[in-house]
Length: 202
Image 1 (cartoon, rainbow, N blue to C red):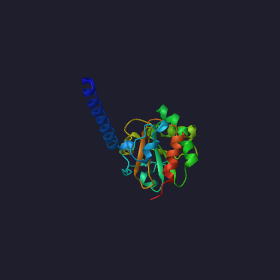
Image 2: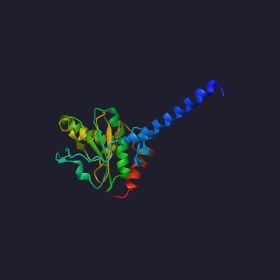
Image 3: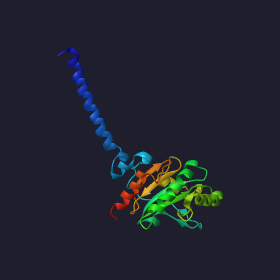
Image 4: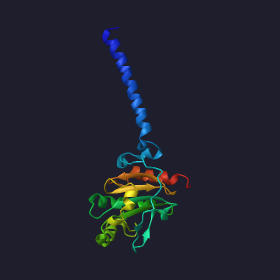
């Protein structure tokens, strides 16, 4: 065996061991790469983050169409997909028709898309109009959280811009969130919702 081989082989073995250890450590330390939901983090849902799964839904209020307050606890017993959107956000408006289509296809007693406008108070009426124009009229209920009431935004973990979507289980615990626009009629998005609906209700 040459002198080069005597040095190179142990170095290669050591490198492989280090690479394996790194892979094992990474897999065990990243919450967003673990759990059954993580397998859906592909394609349109590639940015799906499950690192905060299990956190309880915050009690921060937002409003319904008539201006009365509601919070996420009102939806317990249902799988919900919260979507924070605004009329000044072009990706939000592009995404809204697919959210309305998902609500049409899967909405009911066990699942609901909860689209929360984060527009300013003075733009509330325009946001109601735009929700209808984007496919939500008669499909999506209008919810609103003006900037003064953005506790619901921050407390759900939607801190990386808009749109942001957050999934909560029927027991009121967080499943995952997705920062950025997605096509909610895509195969992976519908498969995710179907898989969650197939789980036993607590």
